[in-house]
Length: 86
Image 1 (tube, rainbow, N blue to C red):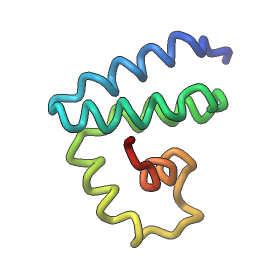
Image 2 (tube, helix red, strand yellow; image 1 turned 180 degrees about the vertical axis):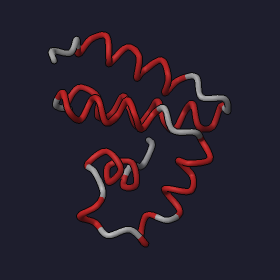
Image 3 (cartoon, rainbow, N blue to C red; image 1 turned 90 degrees about the vertical axis):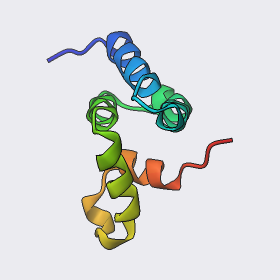
Image 4 (tube, rainbow, N blue to C red; image 1 turned 30 degrees about the vertical axis):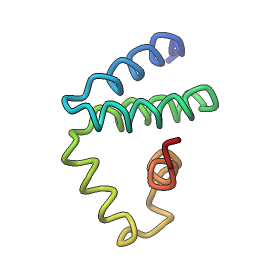
């Protein structure tokens, strides 16, 4: 299946910017903008799933990051955990 990278990027950026709380809007949109242009097609699809998680799930994920074996985590989740907004 061929994907249109530009369409996916637009959807991801939109969703990252309109999450429900201003704090998460800023955090997630900053994260997305920092990595979106360096991702493969597969990673873009994974990022789209990531930005569609609820804020609560993202917070739980970040809190429990150290309890999950590294080999089970995707590049997106690792990048998010290590992300530091400027």
